[in-house]
Length: 409
Image 1 (tube, rainbow, N blue to C red):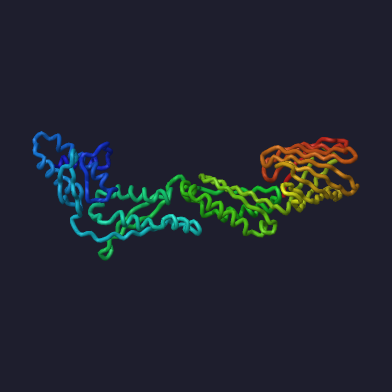
Image 2 (tube, rainbow, N blue to C red):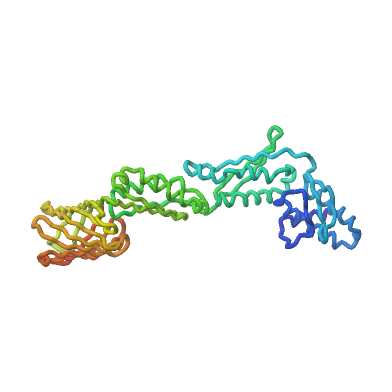
């Protein structure tokens, strides 16, 4: 007898392809592991040559089952086709279980997202545990945990439930707490890109995103994937609430990539205004001096699909503080391509201009030609949001080619 019980205990959590014993009177989630264990015992009994009578074998199986499955008694045992059937019932009238869910320590709004996902899980666990004897948890703790994990996984992916049973004033309370399952989001790396806002304003928006998405750090990546749309909406709403975005009437689009270093990328573009400020220095030319530049534009849409912009640019030379102003209009026939005409003062010279912009970490090109036949162009590479390097050509100078470094402000 002891050998049979020991063998069954070893195989309780094992894997048997086809059970020879069917358990009735217990929930389905508990019946499966009980049947695996009882089938291992039944197999040993069937192979015992000293037991030939079927009733004796069923009686022995019942005795072992009651020893193995504490908290239950065998109300009856019979045969159905090739299966032994055990009818189980609790030894005592069981007090209903209370289930308490303890959410992890999260801050708003992440806590509200978790509570929404956990809503109703306590009721479902309580229903699944109806009639389960407290004594049975000495051997059914693992099946119970697996059942609760399978119940939580679709709505709370990435969270591992932990169980604690508490007896209090005649009540049986199951406390379910949650811990994050690695890998976790270790940090959020925000990025703000814009062709219409200067870097100084983008830096403020980046800090805003960093503060807003701080609660995301420490969350399981699997759960962050399920909450991606909410995270993106949270970041986008926080940017829309800023004065920068409001005053520029900018449109915001945020994409979030859940990972250990999670990238949160925001595109902030104003359909009404464009601003840019920069400083530039030249190398390889004695006729070029550092300069400070400012661009301000007002966009409009005279015809559907034709984006146009009135703009003004001012260039201040560092050597004599001479100021050049440019007033123009430009439009975008296709994405990343701009064409326009501008009037430059002093001199009242008309220039025709073309821009080909490849974005960050990409090459770009611009070219101007005046009514007088002068050419001015730059071919460069934008290293990041702030720094660009370009080869600069100006047909009006003796030293026509130079290297230009630009830092956006």
